[in-house]
Length: 126
Image 1 (cartoon, rainbow, N blue to C red):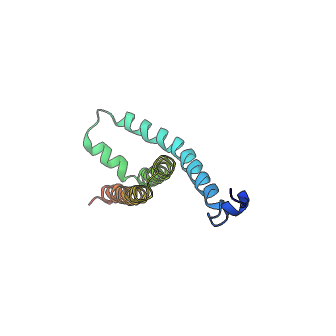
Image 2: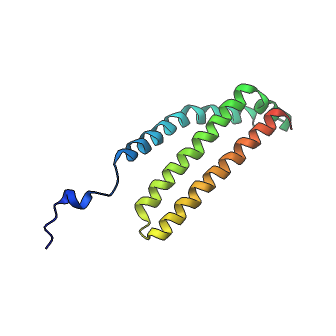
Image 3: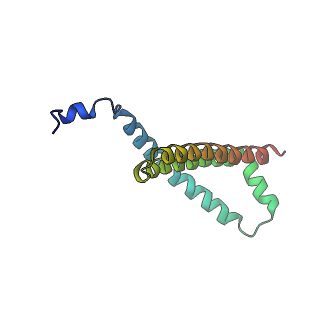
C-alpha cells in the first residue's frame, strides 16, 4: 500500500494548460470550416457542367484563391488536431503512439502545403 497522495502521483505529468489551447483551436477551425465549406460547395455546384476554363478563372479570382487557401489551411489543421486526439486516446503503445503522431503531423503539413501551393500555382497562372 502506498502512502502517496493522489496529488503526488499527478506531479510531474505536465500542465493541463495545453489541452485548453488544443480544444479552442479545434473549435475555432470547426467554426471557420462551416462558412468556408458552404462557400466552396456552392461555388462547385455553380461551376458544375461548365468548362475547365471557368473553374480556373474562379480560382484565379483573388477572393476565391484567398478563401480557398483559408479553407485548406483550416481543413488540414482541424484534421491534424482531430487525428491527434484519436491517436492519443486510443493507441496504448507509446512507441506506436509517437510514430503515428509524427506521421500524422508531417502528413498533414505536407498535404496542406501541397494543396496550398497548387492553388497558388493555379491562381498565378503558372
